[in-house]
Image 1 (tube, rainbow, N blue to C red):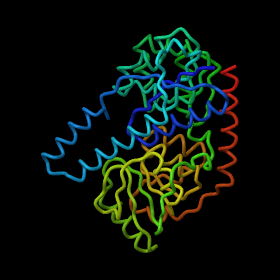
Image 2: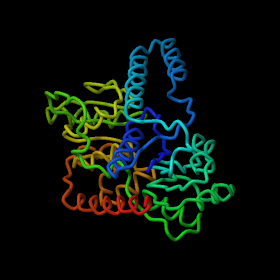
Image 3: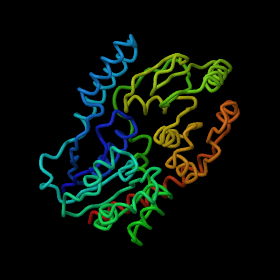
Length: 344
């Protein structure tokens, strides 16, 4: 069967790339031909990156220019190599929408493309897999009939968190909505063994964080790293206090998570991969619904860092991964069963 995946695959974000990669790999493992449905996106395009570089050059922020250019090259190569674009949507037998926050129509990017991410451009069979509404407000959706009608036109719907489950079930008035896991969790750690291994010579704490890290938390990180005799390796927004800042790269990201002593992140997929690789981690991204519900799903709410001063205490707290891994395996089976049933 020829399947067209509708998802965010062009973003220069490790999580977005890897969820698309994992879903593709899973569907190929089910013996399907898999393509990605193209969409227009100015952000992260060559023109957009060029503008950002010029602005940074004028401010003499040369390290930012280096970061932007290398990130663009890395993701451009990875996208071209791993995602085969469908030349014509008419050639696909069915479309799988997901994962990521495709139905977060409070976000201008998704709202402006709501007809695309709701599949209103095709009459062919549509399946929603582990889609999220992000932190949307239900009242916003009620003002737009095309959203409700679009949800009703899916053959099958699964979402990736409790918040999206209640939201979509109520809005679509469907009783067949189920909760599955993010595509990245369909694969096991060994399925992410790709590319040349990075020769890590020293132990390190890995930071995958976007936005500013407070001075208090930075001081906690430096004190912790010094006390353990480890380095601070950072990916995401560059930080001056890190021993090493590495350019965003989805494949290297996985290797850094795998080899890290522990992880600090404020991202959903930073938490996901920390969990997959059974790492001690903490997150200060708990204000995001998707992270809040993820932690609750796997009994890891104590990994939320509500106070910077609690970092050293929380990062050394052990996690019973025997229990967590059993939960993952249960959700993995449920999610793959959903895909197999939906694609019959």
